[in-house]
Length: 437
Image (cartoon, rainbow, N blue to C red; front, side, top):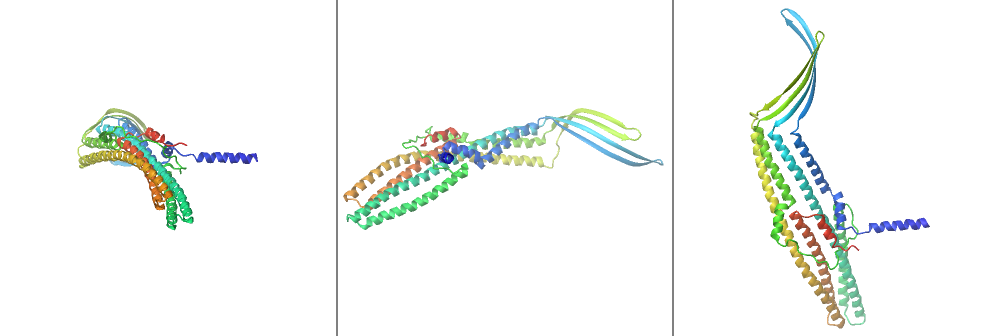
């Protein structure tokens, strides 16, 4: 019996742990370990790290060893004398080559350093995108939960009004129309609740796609939370920050610099190269009569001057110039996109704040209107449909108000992402606005 009680207690604790709401930061941490897009960006970044080592390798010496073994059997006729030559030759060689001047290798090394930085920037951009996707999925779930809560509250109010209409009809103070109207609203609320529950499941599944976990009911925003305008308050400053600091702009700028170096690297195909060369070799001629061993060491310089390569070098230069023009155009596009995103997000925040203030006032007015209509219905100056309309207006306003708050918060994140300043501290600030009960 005690074991059964202990097992039940442990199971209850586990269920309680599982039922705990996931915070926004916990969702982001889970997404960082699960999201395939971020994993792809991480792989790209790690691969880019190796470019620096590969580029530096072109400035270091190379050492190679070769070995050749040849068996020779020859029949020679000279002045009427025939003779056969049969011997084995072994040649062993070690070659060391140190580049002294090679413009191509220097440019490759410079490109590799930029590629490493570009890989890191692109990874940070992927983390920013993930933060936005997590926040959007998180608040979409909250909005869907709120819709269900508002519909259930409205359904409870309609139920109360339906019962009142039935009582009034029974005593003869109301017509059957009031009952039918209330019943119709109640049936409609049930249909809306079913649709809202389906929408919540869709949003929960979308959340799981990003984080790898189906969330329990998440905590909504704390009541009375006041959202503030973005700082700085000037849209132009946000736009300027986006033009210079947006991760997409910075990454594309590095791509353009790499393309510029590619032109110089291809032009180096017309330039000479100079290497220091050291060769050590041993040759063994193994014959039946007089085997010999020859050891040779050679030190020197090798100058290579390209003369003609079938116009390929010139063609590669033209190709590199065209690709740099493309990279510069892509950089302009990235800047314009970042600036437009910053403007749209800034206006979204400001518009959202205005909507929130208007909807907060509308909520107060709608609540007063509902109370007035209830009182008027009780004293006979209002009909049932007036009360039902006032209820619907109140709960629709509350739904729109909650959605406006979530959209404003997400637009605030989008604004910081466009400016290149979004970080985990911003998610932590939003997390602090949630009711952690």
